[in-house]
Amino acid sequence: MSDQLLIFDMDGVLVDVTESYRETIQRTVEHFSGRRISRPEIQDWKNRGGWNDDWALSNALIREAGVEVPYQSVVDYFNSIFHGNGTDGLIMRERWIALDGLFERLSQRFQLAVFTGRLRWEAELTLQRCAPHLRFAPIIGTDDVTRPKPAPEGLIKICDQSPAARRWYIGDTVDDARCAREAGVPFIGIAAPANPRYSELVRVLRAEKAIAVLDDINQLESVVSA
Ligand SMILES: [Mg+2]
Image (tube, rainbow, N blue to C red; front, side):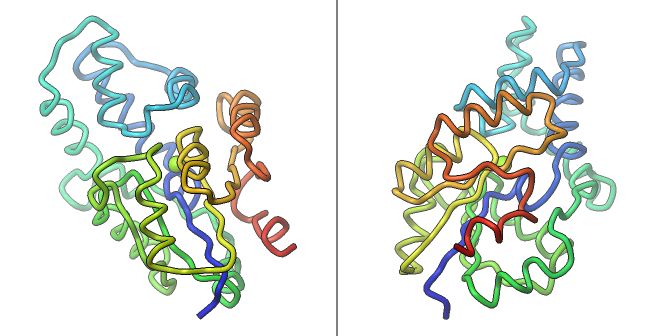
């Protein structure tokens, strides 16, 4: 097994979630508050840090609109849109970002792992649908840790399970960067040029000591091949 380890965040890194999670936040907030929040506004909250959990973020946005709803109702509505009946949920709109061949090349030289803010089964569902031929191990979901990102617990868990000479964490939010720094793992930032707050995101990821900020993971080999 390779002694080099690439650990990936999932949303916005492995899969494009603008039409899944981001749309689900918008619909959930609109359902309870009557207000359609914009995607730039959602990104502003993400850039502040501490809003990795989209249930918590939806709940905060509804409260900010002056509406009080039980937290579990927000979670239940969010999940009903995200999962649907199993075939029509917005989770099915997720798009695999890697071009053909990228992970085939990477997996020859690196062990691949995932630390995500999703529940582990949600991560496995999308990986199975988008990339059934690839092996990511371990996959650590938010239900595998007692403290979610930006706490470093999940990254430390992966590092303990997979002693490697070199390792990197690849993520797209301030919380990912802080999590990597706490765990002592070099961080590679992803900022999609289509992001509605692109230059702000690049600036905050650099400020959090990203060793590189890339448009997407297809540029990853230029950083980790050195
Ligand atoms: Mg992400």
